[in-house]
Amino acid sequence: MRFTIRSSGGITQGAYTVTVQGNGPNGTPVHRRTITVNVGPTGIVNIGGEVPSAFSLSQNYPNPFNPVTNIKFDVPKSGNVKLNVYDMSGKVVQELVNTALNAGAYSILLNAVNLSSGTYFYRLESEGFTDTKKLVLIK
Image (cartoon, rainbow, N blue to C red; front, side):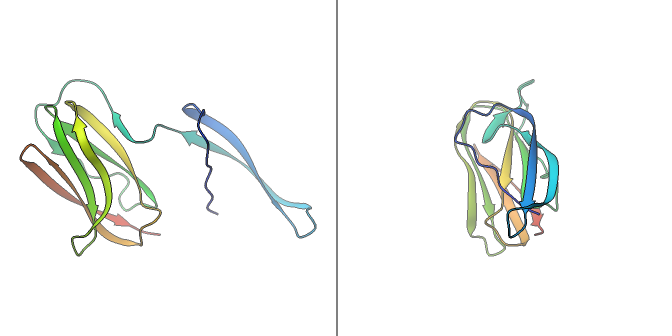
């Protein structure tokens, strides 16, 4: 089963209990499950800690994934940062970061719900630094 929970805002981070109920043709409940939904931050998150001494791009986790994976990267000095996802032909399929960032350790979630199963690459570029990693989306 796959479903999406959307909010107009105002939900704080944390764990929430949600009851999902499936009804039969006449409206009679036929299936009911209680699940826990973890709400976390969205967008680019500065992890904090010491300022990194060098640029780095970590392997995404989990990998393979469906449909969300986490990408961590380090920026040792303030500057413009680009992080894009590319298909096998080299076409940009998702822009994750294209902005100035302060020095720090960062984490961003890649939501690939609109991408097809397959192999993709993600590339971090900043201040003369470039690194590319491979990720695999399995739906």
